[in-house]
Image 1 (tube, rainbow, N blue to C red):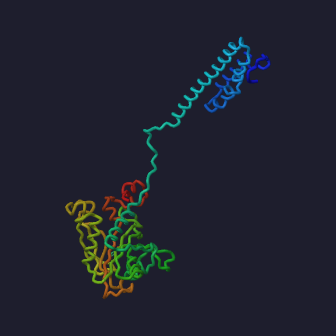
Image 2 (cartoon, rainbow, N blue to C red; image 1 turned 135 degrees about the vertical axis):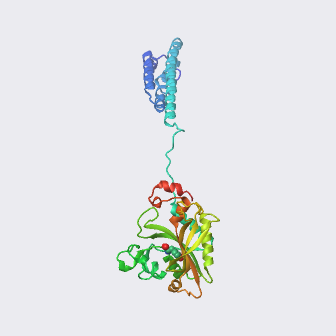
Image 3 (cartoon, rainbow, N blue to C red; image 1 turned 30 degrees about the vertical axis):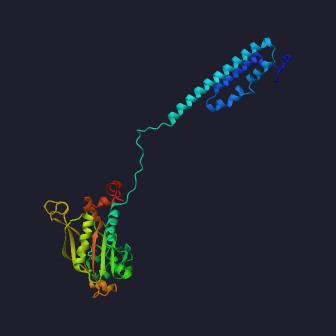
Length: 364
Ligand code: DAH
């Protein structure tokens, strides 16, 4: 069909028939306006504008016409191709504009939108406080020890020189694990770790033990059935009450600020002799406000118990009390946190409201 054709052959040039050309244009325009996307437009392009499209074929046939017919056919085919090309270009422009508008809409970024922030988790303030205290011990060269929360009555009481009829052993103070004859309790203090550490590690010994303890206390602003203590125990040759005093002062100033005043008051614990209660000078009123709510106007805040390890505790753990002496102390971690943060109700610490952790649990 292609190539110069000197013999005019009407059958061969059907493609140049005005109706055929008009039909090709109509078909092309319908396909172009029916293309709903740039991809569709691209897909129909070969059919109407490609080398094998009716109009391209018609164009090629022009060469075969006698010179007189060439000009007229050329004009007609040229115009037809021009119309199709024009429509194609216009549709292309329209579809590109639609695509651009869609992208702008779909990929729009609202820089003023408040992002949905996922709240970060935080370590519990009591846990942080326990670690802070443990750090002070480690800074003094002490070891950190721990013991079980379900403890043998022997470690919790007997090894610590509690008499069989000591009131602390009563059911109303201590949680016993069933059956009671198994002799297991929820430890009422961290002091049983003293006996465990002495038996396991021997002397000389310098250990701190933070942990959870349990008592059948009523739940109120300053009492919880489960709370936290830190125990300290040092056993070595030649230790005296002066070492105890120095250690407690160091602990107090690390936790509550340099220059804090402490005092020891005589007290009684079965496992220490002599025993003392340690108080901190009230850091809110410094003893100047009889109405002070932190110290109830006394000028002092009770912080914990302490003393020189009772000879019978050393003996129960196989340590020679004539050669070794020791001192021990125990304080409430939750109480220390209350002093540091001003939280006046312990229940706030354990109700699990994340806002509490967010406020006091930021230190990492
Ligand atoms: N275990 C005591 C209590 O829970 C506190 C205590 C007092 C611990 C004197 C000690 C100590 O190590 O020497 O009340």
